[in-house]
Image 1: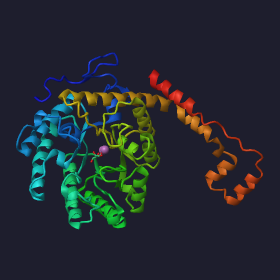
Image 2: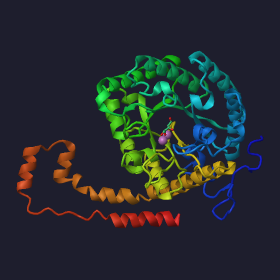
Image 3: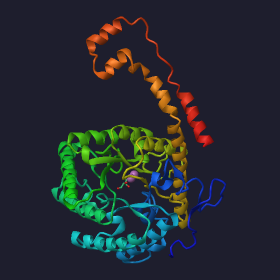
Image 4: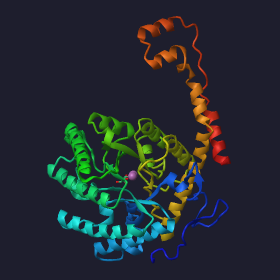
Length: 438
Ligand code: XLS
Ligand code: NI
Ligand code: NI
């Protein structure tokens, strides 16, 4: 216990508290619907942002200097980072964390050395996990930072790169299994293109599917029973990412017979980059039984990139938790704070405060959403709105008894069509009422 010694253990103090190091709305042990809040929300910390981010951006150098990054040897830094991470997990009493292979251990001279580095850190983490209350929500492989992935990994034009990426994912799967990870994530990294003038889109997509099938087969072979997740994102780093949004990924998985092995990891900021509400992506995933997990952050709508800010917008968290509750809660997934403190928030305590703000916003959102679901506020309205499909011609359409001819006959005899108001303003007013009174 040394890196965060000036920061007290974060406890629930309630909405009256002014203590920046206390939860105001997230009481982990508060039981709602027979389950403590911490099990509803399943918060996770993103190793890369929280322990590796330096605050550098395309215009400027790092602004963040973490005390665990002080060694000249990258393996010494990696070990110090593990110590800092578990100290941090304990301070926040957070149940999970997520990692990329390269966040926890540095690349070596070659793949053998890289794997050796990883093994060393993994055994260290394994020791910590024995006594820690924090577990692994998901693992993944970084197939985008190293220059070898300049043209992509599974969708690279270079078969050697495909092979290298396969070897990396093989190892990352083994490691995720060894650390007890409940999920394994594929985020597209550089799987996309910059220009079609040099791209065989068909081969690249086929190869991506081949790659994912190999991952599924290997997971079976080693007995990894975690949930596979794909994280859609429309652009950045490439101009066009193949895993554009939830609907794209769903179509891709269906085409290649992969849908039964995968669910989706939906990220707020990726949804908005795709021109969707976060709510839209979650709803699409849920109704197709594809909602697996969430990368919890938020963007800035005035900036067109993935700013990965801590989610503090309660309307956003409410509508997100609404979908999670409607799906019956998370199974293996959770809420991973794929979020980083701003470049200007370079003090150590900002890291703690960022997470508290995010956890409070989601706890509050959960409570509001729970009431909305329990009172059937939107359900009742929606049921009434679609009532025409419960009887008469609507019932025939839904049950498959109608065809164009019967519908034409019906329409020819219709004297008048009457529509009703969609009442959007009323529903938004009611949503606000629930938000303000909870
Ligand atoms: C990047 C992604 C990434 C994934 C994990 O935009 O959000 O952080 O979650 O590779
Ligand atoms: Ni993410
Ligand atoms: Ni992202």
